[in-house]
Image (cartoon, rainbow over all chains, first blue to last red; front, side, top):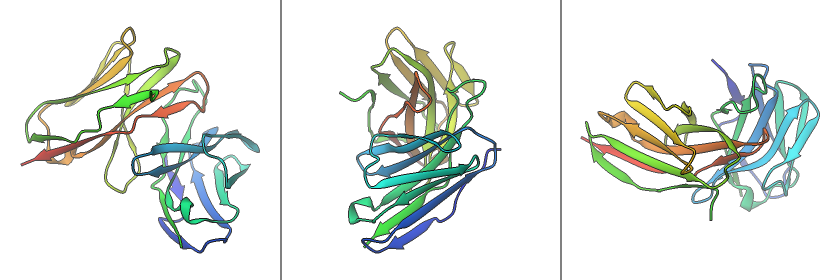
Length: 115
Length: 110
């Protein structure tokens, strides 16, 4: 079974803090994703990575950056947390072979509150 | 208009009933299709992929109609544990182009 692990289930941070959300997958997947999910807005893609050191902006990258130094790990960074970044953050991975169209496997989410 | 549209529900049905959801998508370049279920405050979990010929997994049947651009999910003999939000997911031309529907809430009552 694919395992996608997010380092924290719940986080509380103060406005202006730098926040790191970590995600690790154990299935050698090429593709990794960071989403946020908010009531009424559904899942929105923040960043996507298709290989080590490669990244692509999603629909809402503002205020976020990412790092993929190793294939299994994809980090989301909030440079200066703000209250409107309070949300549920979901990491996901998928293989690119035999097809890029495989389903996503999600981690169990990090519920971040910025006060 | 959203690229993937679902009826938000809630669908409130008795245990043992059959319930069906539809999901429409607007981009004909869509390549692959999935149903996920999401329990309250949990992550989405893959329920089933949807294949062109239709596919079944126990009480669940998924259909794809490319001509009319919709997918459907049928749940037979519904159980209390089927209560969840069901997300329609469409994947198209590049690896990052994954579009989620906003979900259909299903509530099964005893």
